Length: 113
Length: 115
Image: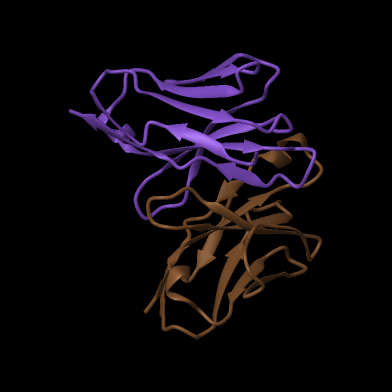
């Protein structure tokens, strides 16, 4: 019940395409869902996050869609660029506890020029 | 505004040895969490420190221990190293008592290789 399932494992898109990464969870106690971007040899960097009281959040070219009833959320990257090539992790957090992050397994994105 | 810093960047040890990794949280943050990230995997929660005490622990053996100092910096200690302990060790900091406490900021990590 503590798992977060992330798909796909890898993704290749052309420049300007809209890659979509999906995550699903089971624990209804999760109430905060951040996405992180990680480049090789670096720590994860926070991209965007959403709480379950909204169904969508946009920040620049990044959009999170959230479906509370299905317990699923996804990251969309608009007008993707080669510089977006990285590994993306979703996470789920229960903020009533000690904010232990449960991470997905990651999606390796490659954006072709 | 200094972000989360970790030292050392890289470390090579042999099986059975002990290692200490260090973390300084983002300025103004008081909570430190440690994660282990194996190659090609997502980070796995080790434990979290707040007010110099471990308050939550993930599924890691007692060989993994930690400490938080009065200035909020933290150390991760691993005893009796195994080959399987080779990973990127990440420190994340946050601020307790704020709604944004759920936002954790990660450091660059320490790459530990056990031979």
